[in-house]
Length: 84
Image 1 (cartoon, rainbow, N blue to C red):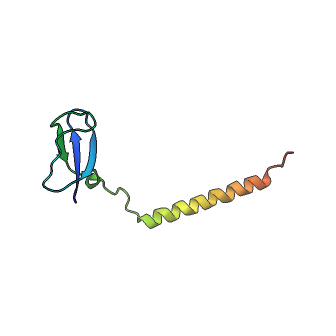
Image 2 (cartoon, one colour):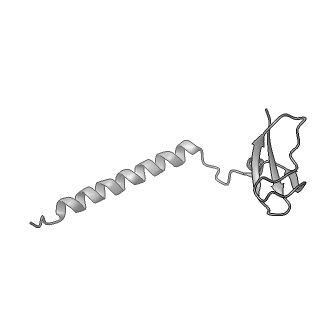
Image 3 (cartoon, rainbow, N blue to C red):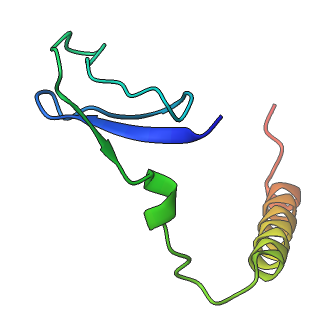
């Protein structure tokens, strides 16, 4: 079943739902208003990738940065005096 995105013209709630192609929603369940729903383009179709880097590259850099932070924290903990 396809996913459709609707917006209520009264309360401006936006939501996605799955239903058959023959069905069309009209009533808002959020604010209980009648015949206020309008089908809008799906939210995900508007998303654009802003980075030209591959996801693997970004994840690898994050992992390396995190490893460095952990090493620094361990070193700082070793250098602290133990207080009774």
